[in-house]
Length: 117
Image (cartoon, rainbow, N blue to C red; front, side, top):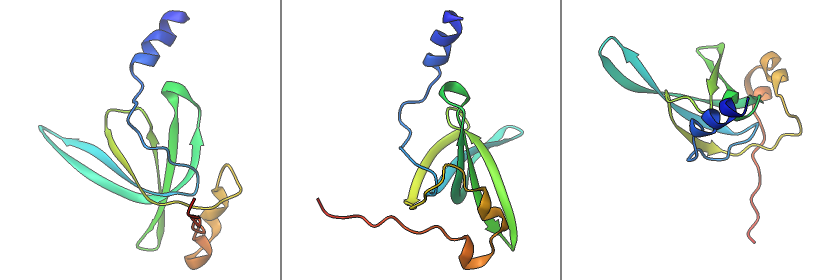
């Protein structure tokens, strides 16, 4: 079991930004189609973070043409190139699954107010 933990620690990414539940993020994902490779962006609200260590994932939700779209990204996957934080959200829940039933402005997460220190 220790050998698995050592191998797992080697494959962890270290340069990811610290994003939380409720943040609006732009995820840069590498898409391979045949021999060609390109980077596609998926922007939305982080509604869940699950597991930990190598298996850690986060779920991003956005509404595209009136249809809710959710994608689950492995944090330490080589296909996730970058995670860019657009806006920090203020929430009081660990999972924001209730946003699935909200429409329009009701589905918006409040922004965190930053104070100067």
